[in-house]
Image 1 (cartoon, helix red, strand yellow):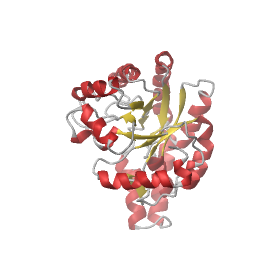
Image 2 (tube, one colour):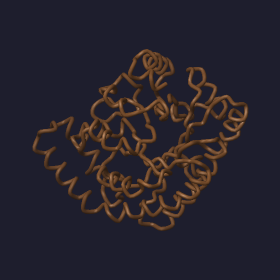
Image 3 (cartoon, one colour):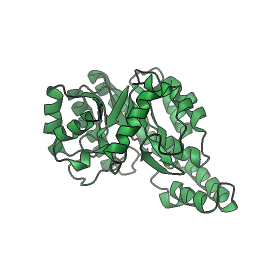
Image 4 (tube, helix red, strand yellow):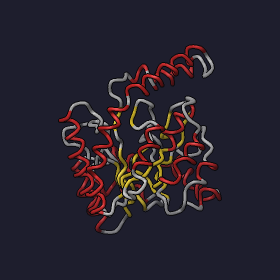
Length: 311
């Protein structure tokens, strides 16, 4: 199911209906309401929804954005945080997001579970992304930094994951009530939660709970693929039994994600074999990308046999 996230154009409009209208001009009616949306834009979305202008396939936590946060920051509060007040705030905001999602008939909510906050990103994924460009993936500086980083992440991660899982459990009954799936998203940085091993364990733990599933972010996973932390296709194959849908975007090697599809370095064809037409395939595109480039990519999507079947 082809859909488009409002993250692409929501910052250019003051009114929710105008955001929807611009997406409709691209010939897309299925929409994911993204994080970073201010409360002030909700009336326009409500009006457009009541007039049946669009189909809300899902929302991305937090929806709408916390009133005290003035930038688009889906990780402003994390379930993994060591500060209980911040964890509780993240939980309350998510419960409110579920209520809002239900009013739009959303079928899922995309969740970020958190991060290992005791790790410094500049010495982790960001460092590896710099080193692989400057030194190469087989260079001694890169190999040593990667080894240190992976070990540190493995040693420190468990408590942060435990907090995230405890929060996730609190959303199951409210999600069931509204008929909404909890879509746990793959992340772009290895210091974020969950890692791949943790994601497998999480999905196995909730395998008898259909409310919980896996959300595949193509660009996030491919950034890790480019760092040699995983193999993209093998990972997707492993997670296919838990798959709900995905955020679809391209990557300019090694880490510039949220690019217009078919303009970066990714080979989508083998990856899309794991998706069925019923699964939401949500284009999550950088706000700086032009409508004209998006229109060209959408036309290509409809022409290619391995993508058109998913429309």
